[in-house]
Image (cartoon, rainbow, N blue to C red):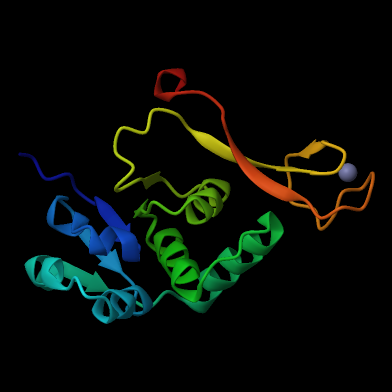
Amino acid sequence: MLKPKGNKFVHDTGSLLAGTPSLLIGENYTTPLNLKEVRDKESKNFLSIYIEKLKVVEPEAKFLRIVKEKSEELGENLSDADVAVLALALQLRATLLSDDYGVLNVASELGIPWKTVRTKGISERRKWVWYCPNCGRTFERHLRECPACGSPLRRRSISFGGPRDR
Ligand SMILES: [Zn+2]
């Protein structure tokens, strides 16, 4: 198998718990926060398989700031570990491995390439829309409340085409 040059992957906590770094050829990264979350969990067994080839990097402040601003703009409530993993993927221009729709939504908006881990066989791409449960209007962007009736908006994901559309 050929090893692609400069193939970088950043793993979120879910990806680490799933053992994904052991399956990928390339450079595998995560952040100290994500590694700590894995160590706090029961299933540390996978970690012993790939810990030696896992690079643990603290993302730079400017990338953390970019991610925080974008997630606030999108109305995504991300954990510190989520923000860190996105910032590192942005910093390293790496592919992000995550199954978290909130994380993947922010990744898409920032132009970070991503792959899912457990949701194998997913056949459609999805994006978020916000809708008003009161009057039914939908919005492409997060707003604090419905401009028409003032109700708090809710979020749902919609399909916008399968892999064949790419
Ligand atoms: Zn409304």
